[in-house]
Length: 260
Image 1 (cartoon, rainbow, N blue to C red):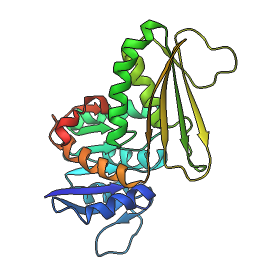
Image 2 (cartoon, rainbow, N blue to C red):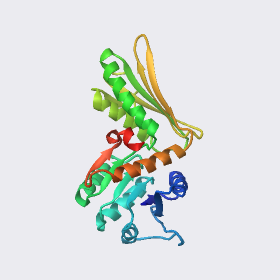
Image 3 (spheres, rainbow, N blue to C red):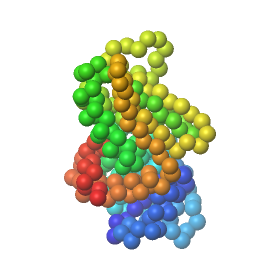
Image 4 (tube, helix red, strand yellow):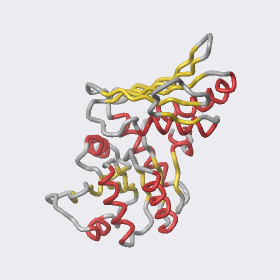
């Protein structure tokens, strides 16, 4: 039985994951937290100190974080300043800058944690990334321009989305392009543009377009509910537990065959 802790418990994703945990016989909800509250089964939610949080995490196997930047910083500081036995982490919080990610990586190596950065826990997005990389390697040398367009609900904070930037960065791992998110003039050579639309209640849509002089190809992914992200998060939580301690991973490291 894998014991799971939810950080970002009160958020929409936290509640969706909690619902699925209740239906999974191989996973057990041990407790949850937000930036300011500790939630333990059978007890009233209350405030906590960093030491209280770390003590509560003691029996946890995997910690899933779907909070925000401030919430992510809160659990990082708690784990950094108080000794915590090696755990597995799935960081689904988006918008973390390079400094924050590097701090998590350092903590992972120092404390022996297993860490997965997962800006999008949809398996479809993971497949979209891998297919886009392959197509970019073929089409970019042939002169095709590559652009990414993403759409989300009006209340999403980060723009472009963490997923769009993840797709762009992973494509650039394979081909020599630079990412542009604020184009104001003519498209530059070797540029990959990322554009954001905000409105309504869109769960999340991402399209990678490969535009040539005589033809165009596209890969798109459309989320129809938050359930798909919650299911993916739990699959990734099981995956990260099997990996080497003291190591950090990204979605490109995940083999889809290992999630079957």
